[in-house]
Image (cartoon, rainbow, N blue to C red; front, side, top):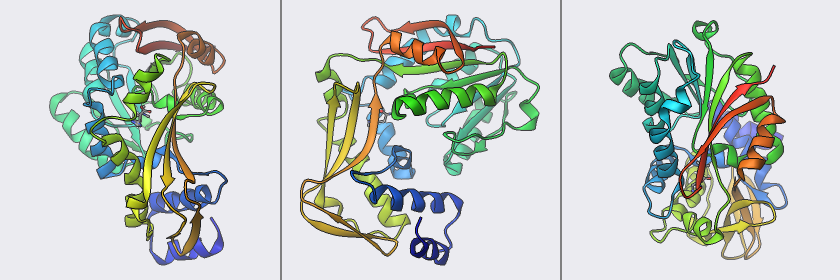
Length: 323
Ligand code: AVJ
């Protein structure tokens, strides 16, 4: 972040996460093409909008993954030892993790997320329903290395990374994430991971261009968040949501398109937009089973088994740390 913006952020008395947000936004809007990281979608309003997305008729991933976890729960958990620590990368709704927690006798649950507020609410709800489970939330950005709580160090570890959040990473980032998860969880660890699959492009298109416009509001919310938290003056109505499938790169791309020539200020810095200029806000990579299994093998994991729904819309994989 440049000196001017740093001084302003300090003058605003930003906390650590807001400082990181400020630095990333200033850097990313200074790039050509402009971009923003999808990890900043999830403030309170964005998390609520994402929950609404998961219920949309067009958005198949959440319900399909849930059906796989439900139908294949016992096979997925078959090799998981009693008393293991379940480490979830990212903490959203607890619906999916509850399925695993009721399937095997975990010794501890470690949700890892940048949003401390969300973590606390999630941990409280789980403690109520699983009174004998020790919950150790870790407030950290799981895309960077972090330390596990001392209390779980001696337990066998199982990573959980549902929702095809892996799809948000560039392929090289997906590889380094899996390697780093392997290092954090250690020898003998296992991993349960949900990965969205390539499919008919129209199905993909509609999943990110829903009729009710919830995905558009979710995408645009990041501009409201910048206005709220970083003293921005985005005229949100001067941007439109666009989502397209990039066939060559096997990914959905979400963009925010400027409707006109305009200059926006964030933390006292000006950013100029041409009419039609894009901010690339998210990539959501879609894998074939073969490509994901090859990625896992090349990133320190041995695939144990893969499951899909009947229509092959979504996949869940059990991985074992390679020696
Ligand atoms: C949570 C990252 C998997 O890529 O489908 C949903 C986020 N973005 N609609 C996805 C999202 C637009 C979602 N992930």
